[in-house]
Image 1: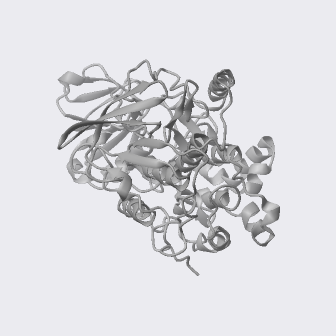
Image 2: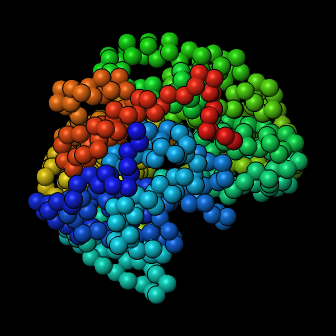
Length: 503
């Protein structure tokens, strides 16, 4: 039985908050729209500023620079990637294509009547603080405008400023040099010799797609990273992790993971792609085809690029190749161009934010979705937004400034220990652990004993975002029914290694 997403999904009518604020939300992507919704659930007055002509953020496909490219799908399944009180419909792919994701986001906006608070084509030029208020200045087709707010939500994302590696000889390279933000579809590779630099999600997808058109594909990267299939053991890979697993001591859990995922380790080893660190020390890339293409020789692997010489690309191992196109899939840097740098400085260790949301000196400013996730961003951003809203309502209180600073330093030390060094290390979180941590702050962790009829699904089923709509603030009346259904929905035929994924 499918849940009627048209009639059952409003978690609750907006409630009058203990304190109601006038809040500006900057950014109309995933984080912005869920923040607007959570704030309105608690009775806050919201204005969302989006610089383009539609909501959706990076999931809007544009032929110009930026946004998504033609083959992009969710790295994680729709079951663990949905909003907690608005499941993705049954007819959607298990790993939705970017067109499906954009349709889902627009459906969410319409269902919760958010368009009335969204201001499109409003570029935020400057944000300044005066005492406890924020002044937001925007440019619009009609001209500049400013407005004062009680609070501010920064939802501008981590895919703003493309990182260019600045490799010697770039200016003299005789081929075409692009950043992944400028790549849209693979026909540009027809009969070309292609080098893709970077083995994050974009680099993997571009290298795989290039094999359908290119004369030759070289995949260059600094170090091996984990490459995982979207499906594993008869279900979406992320649905193999459960609340019961999370309760097991870390050492035992690691041993169980090693046994369960042994086939993945072996596939990496056979292609000389095995990383020198554990699966959960970095963000893996989900792709069903890349390891097989490397094994067959359709993709050649090389170390990182050392330089360019005419038409040749030089690698750090001393080898070289002639290339027509080089694509830097080298990620993005985080920036807040509308802020004076002194307000929220961004440095090598990221931003000094308490639990990735609050700056200790700015309790009425929330940074939502400024994270990189092992798992799905959407439920993490939603949990951040729920917490931010409760803090503004004064239903939940932050620690004192010194305690927050001490926690930030403790978190920095833990990040150094837990994560492989990278430009994103200070922004990285694990979905299951992080959502559980923030849920505790708003008393939204499910109380399993209260829900004995679905206790088995809660303990052994996938860690659905909907778990956090059973108890605590703003519960959803359809939560139990959805949690009961999912274990049957996620099963796939034994021979389905890539159903619904495609290239």
